[in-house]
Image (cartoon, rainbow over all chains, first blue to last red; front, side):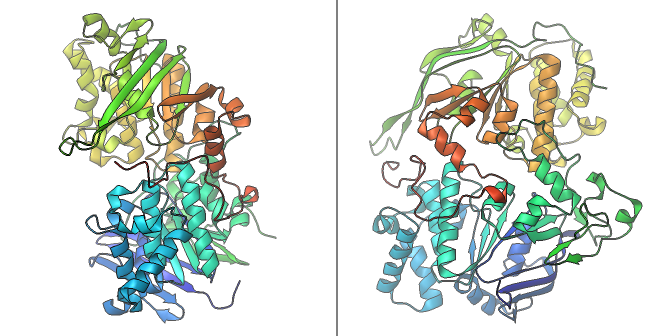
Length: 319
Length: 299
């Protein structure tokens, strides 16, 4: 990959009152890379992603460092963050129906992005919007631009939200569970289109999902989040072939695959909510390799080559 | 401690045959005020039969009519035509016999947050059906509820707590216990795990398998995840636009799908293995008409 990372997150922590959503999370995304963040609900995926672009509610406490093209975003002014969002980092929201304004046409909402961030004339903005919709394989772009969100099907609506995130040509796209609400057949199509357009423009992508299948099919690198920490970060092949963290392995095993008739293998227990500072491995209560040391301190980040993990008893000893 | 529920009489300690014949339902769509209504056939002449103690999976995209089938079988939606039979008895009529057999069919919904009354404690939620159907003397209800809670893997102190105090997986266990309370022989499972996390999904599926083994329950599983369906079901039926377009043993359907829609469904399933990656190509032709059209869908 390229030398300087597009986005570098270090020691990011997010708290909502007493609840700790994210504890010292670190990862970096290179230009043109598809970086997956995978985890269950409450693992801190969305909080981390929103923290990066300053979209958290005012009550949230944010610590650590987020560097985008060398510029520090934590503590940046609201005005600066507003200009970064949309023009340099695009955010695709999960629920297309709430992400779009129901009383304005798709065209008006797309043009607005360009008018705010790029100072383009309305006519040119509309032409650019139509072009992007065509690139996203919307059959009749002009008609879609005149439509209101409720007039479109779920897949079309999600494409409109993607268009709104992409239209100002950002260098990084954060896609937060973009396809979870869609049917499988439409899911695949929308993901392919999103990643295809990003690849064509050389933009980096952070793909947030709970679906390991989606990760395996699309990502270059993956961070597995659990209880607000990065349990493991690795190249997608390394992660699926030789998981280091017991949670990663358990997650992979709990997932049914087509053509595999082995019995279901659930992970016992359920995810916990973290209050205050994290002083133990968050997976300790569900882990089959747990020792007292796991409960006495948060395991430090261990680096091997380009991978990291946070486990005192990793599964594979790297060569 | 996995002794099956033995308390209480009732004919339903074994599975029953669920048979559906020519089930049809259409809904009116569009605005009446502006006089632009149309009738959409949600379910069109659907028939199938599930043998006692077995599971049939019903797969299809949203809008294919699978949930409407579930609702008609559980008498939540009245069909325009067709019959639902439990052990050969119709359950759609108004007579006492129909009601008695209708009790044998219970449903577990997708989202336990909205299917459980948030103001009721868990004990009351589970016990309600027992009292309504007068399945045992009132004094014995608490003991039955305790047993159900235990059987469904919930902590003993769950009874005095409210649904919001539980995680999604545990809420689904509550919903299952509630369905089991009235001693059904057929359970309709409408996307029972799709709102849950992957690691918890497997827990619920294992519980459902245990309950089926213990009570010989007959399951109709409505799902969209083919990998889950393959491992969980004895038979599978694929629905599209209100009709069953393909049916068979799950492994057979996966290996050798005959209908183009089934093929598209299998192809679109994201395989959790980076070595089996299908290349990204933005111009890949759309899988046999996923519901993506702008035109045609609109009123």
